[in-house]
Length: 505
Image (cartoon, rainbow, N blue to C red; front, side, top):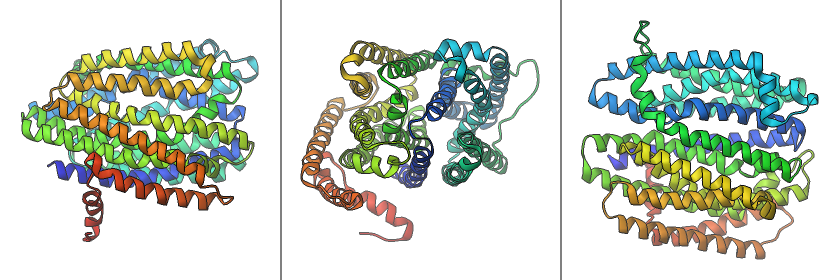
């Protein structure tokens, strides 16, 4: 069972890796056309604001929907889970309509109070936020629909669809910017979301797992299982959005263009985090949740440790390779338009820091839904709140000293602390073994980072692509050499990929 889930995880990782490349090209094209301009800043702020609304009002429920759906399906029936899901979607639709009405009448006042926008750009902010508000419906339906498909062992359809819609998004931005400017970013996003939603509806209908909506006076009450289960997570999400707004406010104080600089610098880790989180929530957590509710303790403990090693395996490649090639990658993707060599160097410094903090964020991302699957949702929510508050206080105290570098530093420190607390609190055997394995893995990862810094000193080439290939080759050999020390059987994972073509090493 664990091997099957790991194979699914690896296949999803491969698909997501290709999607990631397309998304990086989208960022690169965006940098070429808009650079560190005010239009780019407005896009980051308005699209980020919609993400904040999703996170504040909907994602606390949507992100744990899959876990609760599986629980209801196991304890009651699939039909009951679909009826309750239909009720949840009705509540979402009503709430989104209310949000649209509120922003139509009071949007300008809300924007001025939140972002301190002057009259010169107020109408532009107001227009773009109102355009993006409708995307919330497609985002949430896609999230719920993918959750239902995954809970019924349909994993690849959403991932393959996302790959092709990302290509469509890239085409729209590349060719559309000439005619509609920054609006192409918004058009591309809607193309992505609408196409994905239509494909999801098709496969839900095809497999007879479309949410059931029954209009009666109890329709809202039937969603209470999902709402009560997700309610504790409103607190960490709410604090998280405050943290995001404070970070943008502090960035504005540091200087013009810093918001876009941070956005570019963390693009690689954020996009990969989406890939990483998707793997965990798509294939790993549903299986662990089923094992937990079926009381399959031996399978559960073995799977937990196996998945943890799988995650370290992914981190052991991604983090050192991103760190050692941070300058080359940023130069290739972002050295366009108004972005200077000095900007690239600053973005590179931030990229390295975000790659280090990414180690601890990924460990946190893995352990959080494990806690939730063990019905420790309230405790996990409390720890999430404490983590965000710690980051906010740390940033406010030290941003004048460390400038924009403070943001990845604080994220890494507090997510690492919370991860170890969560490991201590979950129900799992051999905790000492797990603690030792994690500490050993972190030490080896940082030794790889030190080696990366040494290699950067000695490998200097005028050709950016030769430099990139040399560093990738040398670092890959070093990673493969050290992988046995963290319990990683590279040949095993390579054979899992090759098995698709009936090949084997």
